[in-house]
Amino acid sequence: MRTWARRSRTPRLLFFIWRIPLILAAAIVLFFLFRLDKLESSHLLDYDRQATDSTRLTTPQHEPIELELDPDDEWIEQEGQATVINNDVVFPRLPTLPSQEFFVLRDRHKTKINALITNPLPTFTEYNVNQLKGLLKAWDDAASDGSFRQPRVVLSTYGYVPCAMNRPVCSTTGEVIWLESLLDVFKDNNYFMLWDGYDHLNKAYKHYGEIVTHVWSNDDHVIWCVNDTVTCIESPENPDGIPAWKLFTFTFWGSPRGWQNFRAPRAPWSFNPLGGEWNLVPYKMPDRHFYLGYHFTGCDSEDIPYVPPSERKDQILVLAKRSEYFHLYNLFPFSFWEIFNNEVLGMDVVLASNQEVGYPIPKGLTWIGPQERHEYDMLLASSKAIFGVGRPFLSPTPFASLCRGVPVILPYRGSECAARPNSTRWCGFSVNHQHGPASLLGEPYVWMVDIDADIEVIVDVVLAAMDAGEKIEEGYEPYDMTIPALTKRIHDYFSIDWEAYGHRRIEQRDWESVKTQEWMYKYLAMRPREDQKD
Image (cartoon, rainbow, N blue to C red; front, side, top):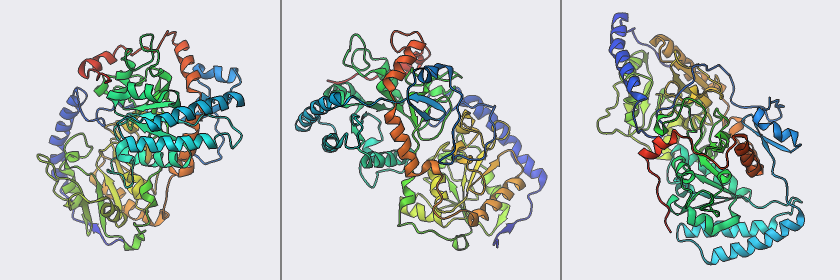
């Protein structure tokens, strides 16, 4: 039974008066929003107004998938190749090596790996040497299952890798949590990741040589490398450089249409000009991005007990770890929270954020300051619901909430975006919607509030969500985020013949080699590439 109730209504005239200046202010902010030159990577995402509703994120494990093959991919079936399907894109499967060729390669690689262990690079030596020792053992075990495949090795310059190398990880940012589960799957399945800084990528790639099967880099690193034909990308001047088909962008945000950080057009694009398939992303995204996904490891902790709904506090936890989120590029006006708090009685609206200089906490919130990971998880588990403010656009926290049986409330701007836009539209990754992928789970898991709705409607949705904890099972996790589902997608990724797929893409575009998009030179003028060091 509810222990809260509505307070007396705010007079309707006052309610509309406070909205008028806020609407005007919001219009001004949005006018300048898409003209700012440089913001953090989570800003300035374009959206597609043709969003449509959907109800679920997950696909049943054994549901048959029927795809209409893209004309560019018809050659895969015409040549009778085995296939891999990811995010509705069909890829050719890498054939196994002939046994004799495999054993020659194994002996050559084992000799090479022993030499690398004896003469390691100076960057993250202990970590990289341990990966090489594991790789050596993997070669000994290779072919034990009857397949003749080279063990997969990623060379990465992605900046968050050092933070995710050890446990516990050094941060709870989304990028680190994403990596955390990927590296766990790597460890359990004989996949390996070496790491070095971008300024040594050329040296590291040539040092490790043919044992590297894939390269994962930051968005700007990929742009710089593709445009460095002397010391990075494979070219006539640099024949031992990184082939373009091996170079992937590991990006939490993908490459949304119209992203002004990169001067991108309002059309499909990618950091590697070969296509969106070379973007590795944590959620299903439009424009053929490769969906790796992740498992939220925080749900595996036995230190966080499940709190039955009847024992949870009469409180809502606001999803915001920075006070700036209430001032810049959010969805609710600053004064909303005081009005919202005045509409309900017997309920705390709790905020566990930093308080940054120049960005005060809104009235109406009970501010308790930032929390350590364990304390935050306990706070979350004992709340009736978690309520988003519009930023960050994507975050693992909704899934941390759901695995503890706590419903999630997310905002969107109904005049610009559907409540539950499907994964073929960028609308769910934009300034007009918070966390499109999570919204697809539907009620009772995720509740959506239109920021343009009357306060009464918003409050009704919030109260309904707070009552929904009884309907969410303990340990709830979408199938797509389970370890088996993640492991399968990683297996699929490493099973693709990326070389054949990349070469065919170059032929289809009638290129002699990979060409940088012309508009990208505007970004390079703003962010000149870093030179490689010897």
